[in-house]
Image 1 (cartoon, rainbow, N blue to C red):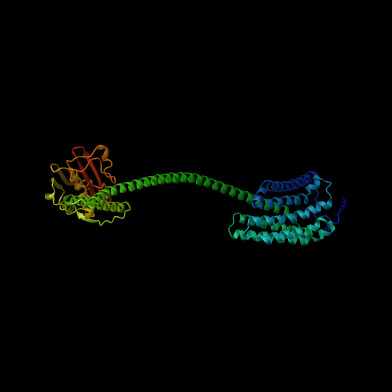
Image 2 (cartoon, rainbow, N blue to C red):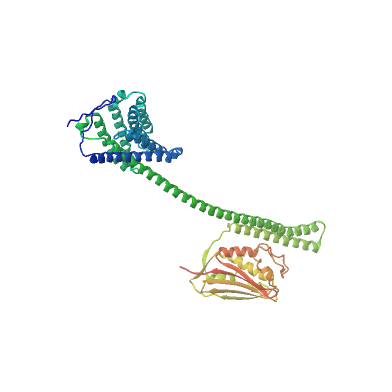
Length: 517
């Protein structure tokens, strides 16, 4: 049987039959041909779908200065054209009217430009491992040197196939160089990309030899389509992974932002509440300052007015006993004024925490004896009963500034003397309470007492209550108890009182007691 095969190469640089003829049953030959067509269709459809998807959907990333998906999509579309115009020529099977020159141009330009877009894709994917200017330069140069294919006939540019193939190999090696650097720097997915790139390089080298050497001598076939599909398919997973990572990061940042906003709202509410409290405190402080200024003015005006009035009478001619009486009253008022100024100075120091204290441990018995000896009780015109019920223990001590506590004790005793008559009695008692570890000193009198409505204000500054002193003296400043309260609190103690109008009052202070180390 003689077979006559006529081959037309359309001025192709390499004509003739490239593969051995195969003989067989029609069913077998048809099955093999169908398998090749289905395989090539699968690869072409995959490249087309990946290209359309990434150009149509992920191209929006180009607006956010991330064009990696755009370059990848364009590369997929061009490589789809290469697959459609090689092998079993799917494009010409579907559209037989496509001119042969157009098909060859599409075959050549699709692979050259597709690889160029892959270079730009990897330049965006691994920015720190491929030089941006060099990547754009070699991709642009590849596109530029292949532009003559658009206008020249196939009989001319097909003669340059070997040089174009070498340029493609250079671009693939450049991509592998960037992938190797990315893998060395442990960039995500770079190792997988490098492995797929090596497979693609091997397939490309095979096809360069296949199309430029004797195909029958090489005993090979066109493998770049399969290698390219595997390489591009790997990139699709890399982009998907990148999008997934970006999505998870966006979700994480969104959750953190929502948490930060919620925390910020709580913080703003807390700060607003704090500012409101501070504002109220400032208002109260301003009100207290205004009241203090009014109280000071009032306290100073009364003795000053009296001093000026009595001295004016002396200047106007008061003589004899009347003059001496006026001078004595003016002197007493001046003493009161000096006492007020001294109390104000002490109070100011206490409010600024500038009052100095010399704390030292004092034995409880010695402390009570010091208070006892601070007065010569026999000279006081009162019936005074002293009860010091404290144990004579060397271990029990109080940490006090003794002169300051004597000042507190003197203030309580002085108030009792001021508000009692000679027929009234005063009981001064000291007692130790073992369970809480504290001692209490109280001064109880049977004088005028304090009204219920006034008792809650008795330790306020300048407050003297409605009861007048019974001793006929110049009267107090209303600062003594406020100063005593500050001193006791500085000793980590407590001061208080209870009273029945007309039956007397009891003032006390309590101090902590410890054991000497």
